[in-house]
Image (tube, rainbow, N blue to C red):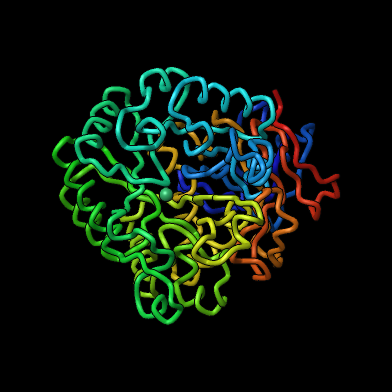
Length: 441
Ligand SMILES: [Zn+2]
């Protein structure tokens, strides 16, 4: 099969130019100009005026299965991922039961093989039950296929436990992803602590709740010489600390979510207590958002991760204080981030590196590149199509998005996994029947 005449954007080869791609079976065989004339017998997809990019890698997704299938299943979560342009996602351990032992890891892997559309890489809990008290079955989970450790949703409060987690992680060559939050300062908080929160009469979560734990984690990584990855950074103070750590050569990496780059507490205020804007860490101030964008541009932020957190309607249709945290983010991430990045002067190629090779590097998997010989995981994207976000059209069960009604430019037209189309948009340029279907076995 040949994808011809598309603009190929690939951060691994640093290319952004019109080229053809030849796919044989599940691999990319050739990338270059004029392939369609060299191989006229191949089935061709005309990609004129479209972008061809590597399938995206999300290192922070909540799939909710097992245990919360009413919020999302591996099936619907991977459909949402494919429709959003992702071909590899790493799923967090806060399921029911928690993924803190090899039988849950195996369940997730088998279910993803049977029903998933794309690659699902399980993240194991660092501690049993995410309680921060005893280590989870790290070695056995590693053998069963976890790619990282995280108690995401909760911080690892006890520094001695964190030390043990980091030492085990080093032994098993697993990255540790920490949700940085000091619960003693954030307790009961539902919104960023500041003027807006006070005006809304809601209890605040100060920036120091995050940055104080970021500081601890950096010092631990420096002391033990073990890498640590900071999840969903939201404040300028955390960025300043991470920048310092990087200048010192401390092995710290971090991620930012599309919603922290696109929204602030002011948007929450204007939304009049819309619980779809309730996230943890909370939406911060414009100064923080600017600092995140600058850090992304400078390379202080290593990757963009969705923190896709689908919820049922009941969990959001309650008073702000009681609503669950999170945004269903997989299906809006790419166009949103390209738009926000464009406004901040960040090139699409730079943005794309933060959604492909960079998260793959942190997870230690070879993904997110279009180099010949790579698995043919790629997306075809129309950079000019404008559409309005309608959560009722999401493949995700989670309709919880603060972007409903927002007009976005850029849409995924097709997603290929191992050389086969697993997603084709209903409005595709080839007049093919739309699909969102199981991956080839
Ligand atoms: Zn988290």
